[in-house]
Image 1: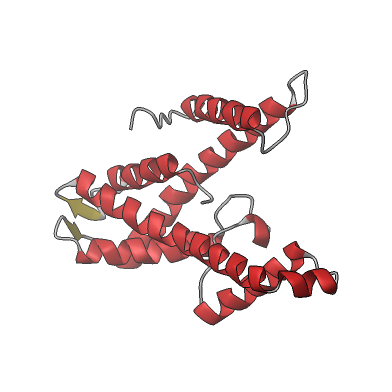
Image 2 (image 1 turned 60 degrees about the vertical axis):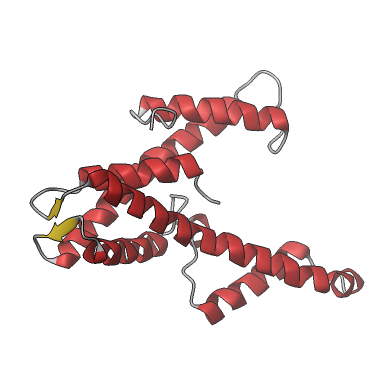
Length: 196
């Protein structure tokens, strides 16, 4: 998944806590936060399931790809793009589309529509203003929190890169260092995933 589950939990709860009272009346912010977490997790897991489906398809064609010197990554990208179009899924990765953040603007917008729908169905809240204004506020809040997460991610990677010895990405040592530095950098933005 593009975002750590702990960060998704933080993201959902923070968005619910920060929705302005002049836009929405919320009786139980923690319940709304859990709904947000669930919706965001479901959306992010869509692409994980799609990636698994692509891997399964590629396993069936591994001999064909080897015999015809077809790159696994190129074939993965082609099949994934084809399935994305067929299933009408909005790609989650912003980096694929040139966005600076992990999540694409399109995905953030897609999630905002689903969060608004969840708010409309919830018995814990009542929308006070224009629904689209509320949805745009959700986009703003989510983008702000994701921007801080992206800065923390970049800073953690930079710290690992500046160590005196080289630590290879994907190794257990790299993963442990990244987890520690990432948590430190998130705390610099006032985000404590362990305290959530």
